[in-house]
Image (cartoon, rainbow, N blue to C red; front, side, top):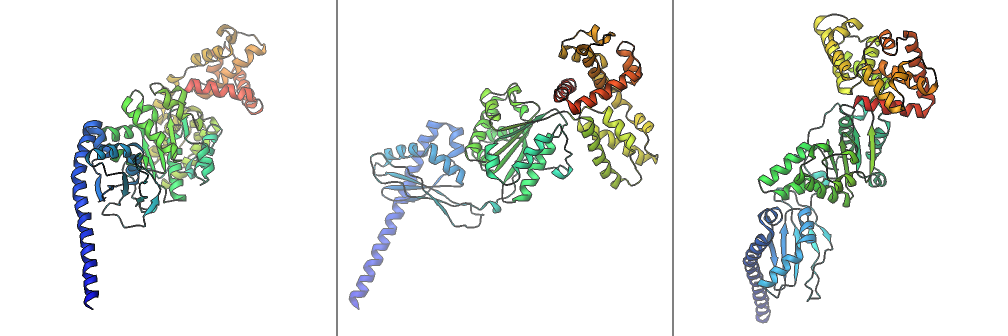
Length: 497
């Protein structure tokens, strides 16, 4: 009995000695860590040190190894990849017996505990055969993550259900739909997705629709939608408060990053530098990136070549200016919603056809015109008629007419087909001249508010029936001849730009 008691006491003393030794190792390691931190601060500079090392602490220490605690998986991966050997080198100046550094990613105190995920990451002292012990990574499952506080809010109206599809946007719409269908092989193959087009053609609507659909299909995926302007603001704020670590963590730990109107970072060199590294980190990690702009990647002036090149890596989808049929479809969809809210406001088909013909600049202006007409009818109690719509929108119609004149259309078409203005206005009937003349008449009907007789007079004093024939001929050719369809689309985009 006494021997057993003696043995027990001996074991307890051994355990206490072991615990005391561990505590001593930890105290010594923390002192050494302060000196290592000082060297890192002097070597890397204040900004880099604050971004990556400010939150690092010593978790465990033995005679030959150190375990450093970091707050997130992202920071841990970055430290392991870029700085762990440097830390080991500085530590050996303090204690040559240290041969390995472990990184342990510990959840924040307010987060619920989860089972740690073990990953194999090995960093060794070149003079030692012992590898670093497996890194213990603790992280929250994606469904426990909070909503991001760096992105812009999503507009509830901008969903796929409310997006009207036509020839001008069908490719962009199809690409956006495929991104959200949950098939990894597709979005990895076409990553990034780059959407571009003029102002008010539906890029932002599609971006919001993608975000809503991804969140609906898989709420665990973390999606950030933001504007390029807000991305730049967040970056500048992080620089100001010396908190680049949080900025990088917020934007590089997402599943889907969506940046709208990337052209706004043109000329902003530091913002472009950070966007470049964020973009690469996400693409390398097989995370989806979706970008929009007002022009194609190759035409983004003021954006670095290396960024423009990477933006064109995946799928580039153009949203063309709307044609008459799409504008009419958008108005019909919008009118249904407005008439549900204003039960007395019935929008005649004639009014929608007029607006679809006359307001050809962009969708926002088109919907705004319809809103004005319906609101006036609701306030005044008057029925909606074509005359009332013309009266309410006279300023908009005048502005639209000033933007594109028949003279501009004639010059643009003449240059495109390499014919002289005098020939196009003459009585010549050869196809080389007659076809451009008909297309110019058609565009004048589509893009100006001039009457048919006025258009005819502008084309060498022709009768309005000649204009009607030209318009119908071009409409027919657009359906049957792909080359004419392409020519007209190019001219429309050029004139409306």
